[in-house]
Image (cartoon, rainbow, N blue to C red; front, side, top):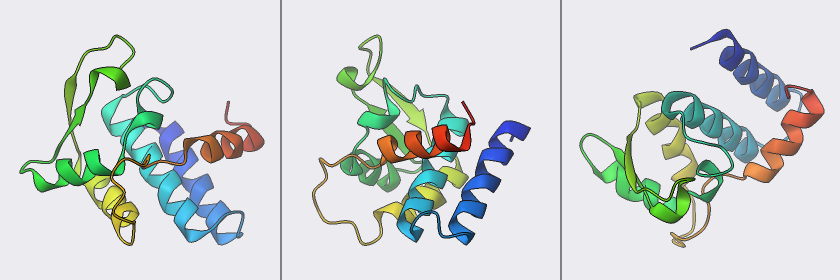
Length: 122
């Protein structure tokens, strides 16, 4: 991991320890950062549009591979994204206890954006 990613992950850890956000938000932010760092997917064009069902399907595969749909991609091209074990571990925590509505977005991207701006990472 690059130093920038390590810095953001450390800030997420610190924010959780300081009770800036809930454990669920902590898990979400960490999974979002790891997914973005390990896959290179675009945050606005793709990551914020991914669903619980897509990740459930991906984790059933061996190896786990996420199917990104054309409407979730900037250039409207369906593609497959292999999931690193770090991402698998982080996303598995997000799926635990989630309701069965597979159409909901997996990441709470808007809250993460606000937190990042407050922390002045951007």
